[in-house]
Length: 362
Image (cartoon, rainbow, N blue to C red; front, top):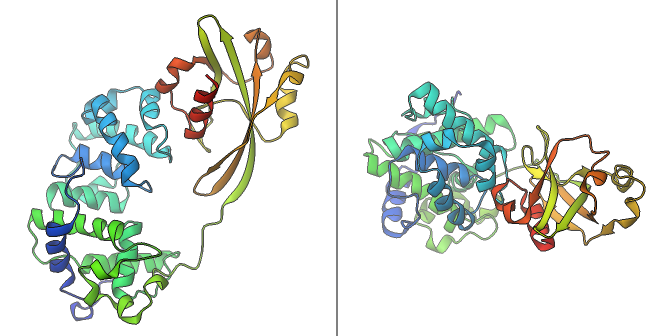
């Protein structure tokens, strides 16, 4: 990727030293993935933290590590078990790429992650910013991350007028990010600088209400000097969510040994690809037509559930059918599926709203 590097005189060269000093004094230091140069743990945390809050990841990270403590055990793990442990974190392509990446590290790299950001980007699911984070944290490589939070920090620092919904301004800001790096840093400097960028965006330089009074680089920030912090970053193209209504067929089999539900694996590509889910229909009529005519009248409409995704707003309409003869209920089902006991739901990869719904019906 070609980047544009401006003259040093045009940049606030005190930015890196101030940020490093602040991170060491006041940044975050107690997160479970900090204080290590183990690429596996850093990589896992970086993937989990993509578009996911730290508070959410704190619950998943130790559980995942307990089952998959290293890249070898993850590579050898069953895809369904990986998806089950990821269930609820969302953006499930991350979990699929995580598993593929671990397998590629074992087969193509002898079980060791590449040491440079450039080489790391060749692995599944590792983009430029994630690769930079791993290389900086684990090997002290002098390279900057540029995730969403860091884009906001640097766009405000520089009053960057480029439209970050377009590729060319993104490349320009990337060049500026590299030019702002500390000069001749030690590995510990790169750890503090990289973590400082993350901490500043997460704890002070918020999207709508930045806490400028506590910011260590306030005196260098051009947006603050202009009094226009919230105007940056500039993005003219806003995300448009599409509304969709899904009808879910909940086949529940209650018997002496307990309760179980009929689940089918979602196709790829698409929403919830690879996860287990009740049969999905786009219209109520199609759902009813999928059942023997004698069973359709026994359907019970439950309260609808709203679920927001990055690009879609889903309105889930659950339709419950308690089956007496499981084979009769499935006579017209074309897709393969499985009956899953309520006690075994946790061991299957389920979308978060589906998991909650089924647990309520157990």
